Image 1 (cartoon, rainbow, N blue to C red):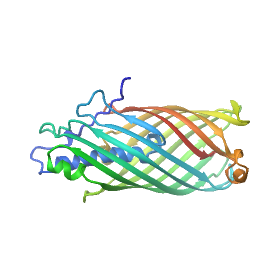
Image 2: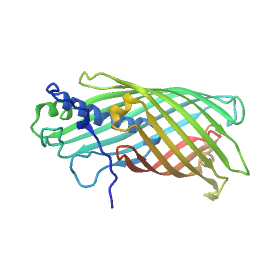
Image 3: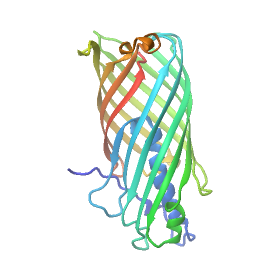
Length: 305
């Protein structure tokens, strides 16, 4: 099977006469930032995802298995709906034959385990408009592995580390209903602060998520519970600070989901979770710098509308 391709231009950020260890530090920052962004961002998370390269060479491979959920208090259509979100996951990024301009430095691997919590408020001034404001924090513990003889590479990649992502976000969505179909469009702006280990300075910047799609009416029933579908397209746009850290400026996505309304399955939770849907998702991704990949995922949420 042809593997997805993700080109990392780490060497391009180096300058002649760089201080000893700066290249290795920058490369660590580059790889861990891409890993953290994939775990935190809506359209690069929530399931199994891979960005890789053909063969080995100097192109890193990223895979993760992430599980997130959200709960909206109140009823669908309420003016004010507080919500909480949370999740956990695992991210692995590997690279063979690392070459920062001085020859083969060996192989690296960063295995991360993370947890994410957050919440906010959803305000619906009318039946078609929704506004959201919230915040979240993601903490990642990373087990580093390095096979090679470069002491600076070992300093960053051969030790355990801890990182945090602080996300402050706000957005707007428009949704309506036409003959049982529910089209929508959303825009969300994020201000991210990434806190690294090893005394590396933080990265702060903006990214925007844009998406549009449609929910279908009930298509079928499974165990006497309704199943509907969702089709969507989406995009992420990163400012210069975040794109320098992660290695790409933009990413584009298209996908589909089957949503199974499982809330009534457990009577004791029927009132609180009656709108809960279990979603099975499939998504493809492409972007600049040869960013590409795929995601097959399982998630759950309280239906927004």
